[in-house]
Length: 392
Image (cartoon, rainbow, N blue to C red; front, side, top):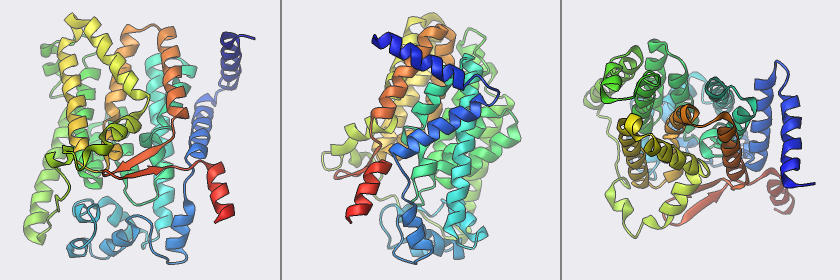
């Protein structure tokens, strides 16, 4: 039996599984189960903090304290680098206040949001490709990187999954009220959500111009569409409210360990690993997108420069902080945008096999998180966690 025949048999079996009317839910279920088994969540951390009141894992302790008095940021002053940057990241403290500081509710909510986010991504991919197997491969690849698995695996109170989910909602729905609300929530979850609104704005510029020649005039014609206007309005609202909070409540954010000095030799030893492990096989996807744009230069030259500048900006700003993986993952909208271009210029068969390759790379690559120059965290698969539990 040859390798090709084995792959064909596997795909035939998958096609049979996805032949029913519930195929989309099966794609979600299979993708999430496979990915969470390869990076299984440590729910014991939440149990120890919430039920046994042991020292908190991650930021939960400080977030609960902050939720008791949202406008008092003094408790953040003596914390670590991450803690001192939580001043304007108010979404999780507000949720904890609503849930009476029960962290389990946050875990359930972010899990449900993660499932809904993956559902929307799968729908976007199927709308673009009309291919169930391509949709499955893309979804599986996404749930195998930090962006897709964070809602299930990340239980330290970083809140990235809330921002990621809002970005995808702002990309899927055309309603400007929904987009305004989603970008606003993403911005108040993390400042990187505010910046990532620019990637969503570029998505709508290109999405609304995809049937045109994609020239400068075509893009400018959509600069004041309902979608882009909603994003700009959310930015203005965020800035004005933040200035008001700074003035009347004396809220200030610590910018320690942020800046160009992080690119220096003392902090840059994890940059290469951090960049690759953030998106893994999707870097090849981004590279192919650039090649396709160059190959269709007359039509895509304006978009190419815009896309390239955003990728470079994403990498530079992400390398100026210690948690590169989390930051790069905010650029996931650019991957979905690349899919828009690839579906325009590649055949369905080419896109199908290429997406399968990306899924394999992302799946077999272990989920790693880099923090600073000396710390790399491996997300343990379930079998390994069982071994640890048995021998500890």
